[in-house]
Length: 89
Image (tube, rainbow, N blue to C red):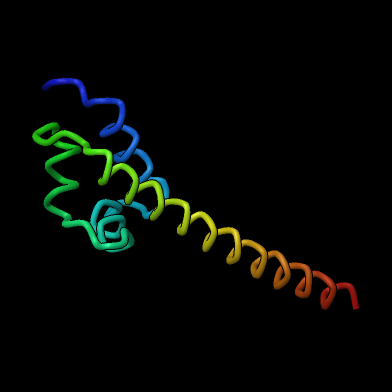
C-alpha cells in the first residue's frame, strides 16, 4: 500500500479525532458546501489527490467543530462545578 500524502494523512487523522470512528462521513457533512463521503474515502484511500479547495473546506469544518467542542467543554465544566458545590453543601 502506498504511503498517504501528508494532506490525506492529516485529513484522515483529524476526521477520526474530531468525529470518531465514522469521522469521514461526519466531516463530509460538516464541510460547507458539503463534500461527498465518497470523495473523502477516495482521498484517504490514496486514489484521489487533495485539491486546495477540498483542503480548505476540511480545515474550515474542523475549525467550526473545534469551536463547538470548546463551547461544550465550557458548559460541561460549569455543570461539574455546580455538582461539586452541591456536594459540599
